[in-house]
Length: 344
Ligand code: NAD
Ligand code: LMR
Image (cartoon, rainbow, N blue to C red; front, side):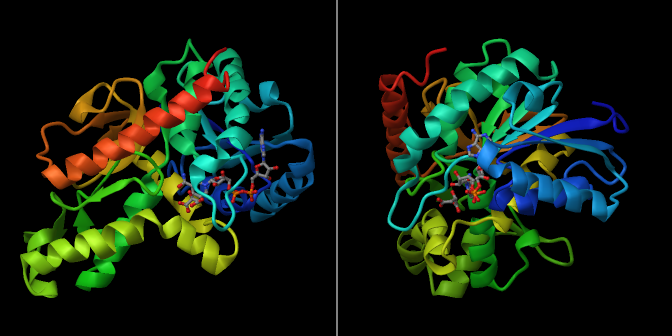
């Protein structure tokens, strides 16, 4: 896609919470830059149409320079027709006490037909980001129904987890989140995910770089204390942040999820900047994650391709956590296979 070519973006679940936080940021140019014209397609189910239509009216009222058109529909063929980017948000969120995998049966059935509609009508260069939970396995389902679209174009969102990890490090170390790079989220977007800071770096105002582990050991009173903090505080805090938000807010994260979707797509097309970011992409066998599973990796993006960063050393504790997360992804795959959701 050239810089001035209009980009057609389909947002499913556009009448929902995340939709409302996401649409205005896409239209304002936060995803592709203010000079890239955007055509928005809002796909809903009949009960969500009014809410999406209201959002479309408000989008017009913003008079955004980059927004070329807004279309609202409950017809998947129309919603995905000619789309360059499909943001699959529309799905039920979990409530208090649920795990994201509890949504497999409720939400899995959405992603097969949508994958098929993408296969049939989307632009040849279509890219897909799945946000609706359980996101990794839903991406697998959508991809399985789109045999003409290369599997690596289907991704799932772990950028929110990545940003949450940056936020916790920022709070603990008293440095801006933007000064920290090369954090990794491995595995599933679930409580089994593996936030890993072993390679993370901090850039100071004078440009000097320092390992996050070194700064943490200093702030927490030594390496042994840091290891305890990582295992008992940091990892569970990041991995269970979604549940904490649901408990405190009364509904699942919306604005931070929308911000993460903007970041994911921005970096996918326009580049990652210093270090790498995290995204769930189809595994090519890297880091012993079985081929074909949609798992989170350290990735570098440019022009709509994610490249998995290779050759990073993994501590045994991180590797065994990743194995557990991969096992969960395999179990999710078995469940959706047994439900017939992976077949066309
Ligand atoms: P919401 O209930 O506010 O909105 C969901 C919208 O999707 C509703 O308007 C509904 O009508 C619509 N919808 C349902 N089925 C649809 C279909 N087949 N086609 C089109 N639209 C459909 O929920 P929300 O808070 O916006 O969350 C949406 C999803 O995103 C949930 O599954 C939630 O768990 C997930 N989520 C993921 C992340 C992540 O990091 N990956 C973060 C936050 C939320
Ligand atoms: C999140 O991480 O906030 C979302 O996946 C919503 C949830 O169910 O946790």
